Length: 510
Image (cartoon, rainbow, N blue to C red; front, side, top):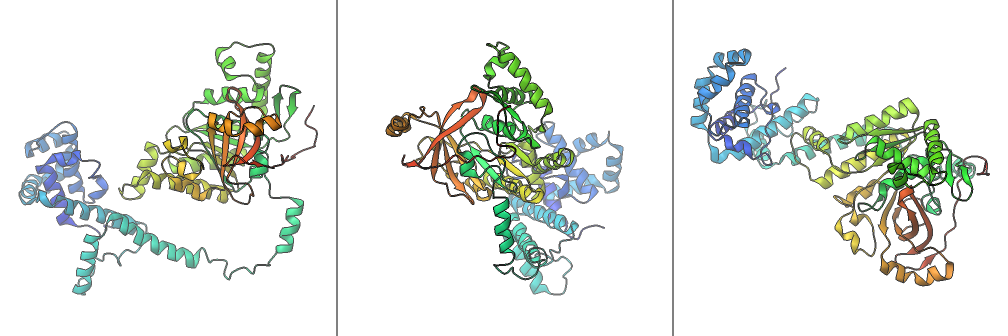
């Protein structure tokens, strides 16, 4: 059934203007016209032909050009001739008001948006009702409101309506509010039996701060380029999924856990991820693996690590260009196929496919990068809750990280709002010479190694430690970053125990 949300005079004006001045199509950042804007087949053919001719290099388009183009497309040519297209097009160009193109373009886009909502069964007659031919006052009021509303405003009006319905029928589907003491004794006993902790992340102290990798939680660990955010996530993924790692003192030791884990890479190829995984498990510098030059028993350790990877429930998905739906689909597939519970997504950034997806869903409305990144973080947190899994991701940092005295969400490149939905927020930074100087007394008194990195904990839901640094020694060649001690942002020592989360028998040695 044809939609009632069609403004034919505006469509004629748009086509007439573009036919007369095809250079309007060059402003793709301002005007985005697609075949969805022309529901009538004849209008679609005429506009599509003009668009193609200009795309092929025509600066000026005449009726003869249109006819020549359609001559090799019999079906479209038949529609054009039947509708007296030559006469129609010349008349449209004659009446086209190029100076008012913006007005007619916006009317066309608004009708496209209203048709989209209408096609999904969403009543938008309160915004614009073409069937109203009786109440002239209401019709004029709606016309004025439509002309003065942006696409974003129309979307928000519909979203408000959906939110109101959800508040009544979805959010409130369980009825009355819960009394505060309902089931509280069982909660206390359950926490005594199974404290609020997850499987351990790699390294000392980090599990004290985060309480491990907890299901239904979303962690974010951001860093500048080259500092180790990818390597740190690979270490955590291997630590969760693999039951043995190599220790320089004790050799191969039991790791105690072997949980199904997914690593989603957005920049590295499979082989690049695999060599880092081998380096972490074997404690062999990745350079040795890449060069094929080993020292001592390193080659055997790498092959031992390869066997461990073969036997581990650790999976890699390569998503160089992804949409929001792609991310969810990959996670759902691995939950279904491999019972994955722990996901590492490297890393939150925009992609061409995301931009296309958001533009399509919003009816061509262009959203800022910060809005898109925020939507991606919302989706990741929603996936955590929906499927009961743990997700860790990362972001790049903006240039302010070099001078910030309190590294927090304000350093996240693209959108600090990403941090709104996370449960633990961390920023990994190089330790500067000023940092080392300010720590000199602590380093001397406690015989700590000189730190290479500092991990700022700026957000920590259900955790007592935040607004602190974890000072770390690091060997990025083996993807091993190990916190040594904690301080406040003003370099005052923080007493913190090293929480050990045991997932099997206490002994780690074979």
